[in-house]
Length: 64
Image 1 (cartoon, rainbow, N blue to C red):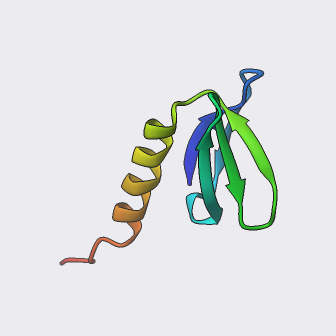
Image 2 (image 1 turned 45 degrees about the horizontal axis):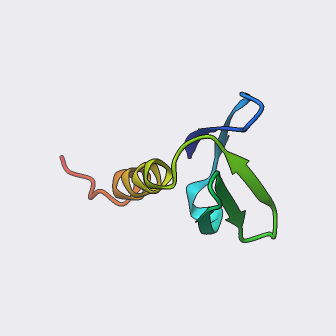
Image 3 (image 1 turned 60 degrees about the vertical axis):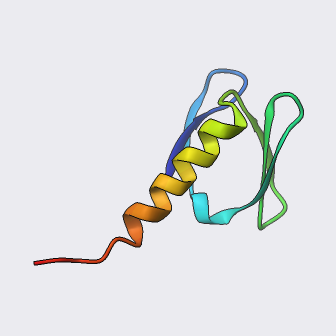
């Protein structure tokens, strides 16, 4: 899950694994696998960084 901000300033958390693609239009448009689209304030590069960090965290091997 990653935190993003809608254009109206509302904070929300989305499942990064449900993002199908993103566009900079110039605001960042997130398109989910269920067809839902949302505009967010964060730049495209920042959303990508958060999604990658999330993926690395959940796929990190469990060590003792």
